[in-house]
Image (cartoon, rainbow, N blue to C red; front, side, top):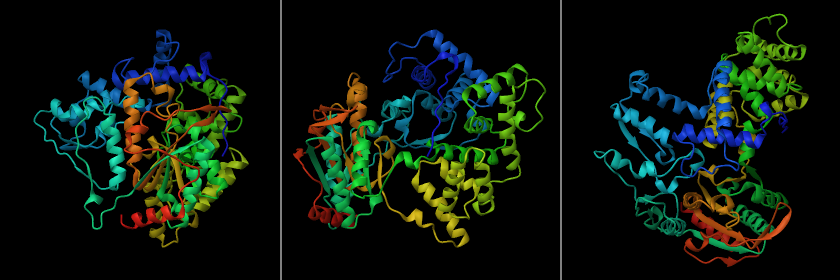
Length: 546
């Protein structure tokens, strides 16, 4: 993978400050306030002049590229509803509305849903306030906690049976969340379905204390080795990280040293690489030739085309009343663009002409060679990357399906699309798809997933909840919910661990146990290695009963 981060920033705003200004704006469009709950203000605070500068930029951005930022779409709808310009149910008649993961909605999302419910749509919402973990997009559990108060005629149906976790795993999670409850938490009486199965399945929860982070990483790696040797598929093992910067390096190094196959969420996110971004933007244009942002993105990914050239082209489009997309499909007006800018436009125009007659239903068999030729425009390494991608996927996969594979974070959707393409053409699935790997990802990234065995390392006060959350009681509450979600990803066994010290930023620092550790229903014990073969066999026996 390659990356060419930009070093130029418009208007002299540094990358970090630009992120803070954007975050301030996101707070407003998500909540209607610049100081909502759980928003951590930067130091120094955002100035009104900085907000005004971004506000002036956004309309120009929309006018040039024919889009608005994704986070503002719901806000834009709500503003138009408030103004009486839009009535959602008149535009799209909806009789029944189902809203899943209701606890993850922020105030503007809730107002949008309310507009449809009050408009007459019969509305069913599902969610769990114990799993509200998206304060970074300003979601709070109170939306689902107050639903029956806001809709006094609504029914209230609670699930009491947990079908994922074995008895001991669920008990650890419930003990935690009841000792660290959110304000106004909805009471629950959860029971594991495996408590009443025949035979009952108790499952395993281990609580380990290591001398240092390296010892913890090696203990996890040797545990994965033992589990896989006893028959647990590698992809049925999850390692969930609260802080990727501190924890991921030592753990993945230990997995490599132990020859344990693994993949991180970064590896699954194809759009984090330039080659993935190029391919995805090409497919977006094939799907929608009027996708202005895909054109802009590809322009900036061309070798030798920097931010300054892209901004110069945008400014001249505005100054000369041009259409941004049209400059790649029609002759350029004389004397408007500099030679460097015109050269960049011509290079992307050549690519656009090459894919002009392609369709979403074309298959990789039809277009793989041509895609590799197009990749050469961005650099020879991209041709190699494209050829590797094509070789790893079924030739029957359509370009539309490939676009979905690249865009999704759902392994299930990706696998189903690939499997359907193989079945459609009677092909064998590529061998690369059959490799089973331990999954290393963030706690947030595991939402909605499950595994037979889950490791949750780094349970130290300095790491989790960590210094960013500690001054904010609401974020401490959210941290307890995040740990609850992490524990309940486990079906048969969950291994919680912390280290007495670890290397952070090149220096060893002593660490204290996380405040949450005492609320997991058991004592942490000193550990030097990992899961031994006998314990691994016990876990495998439990897995066989799930």
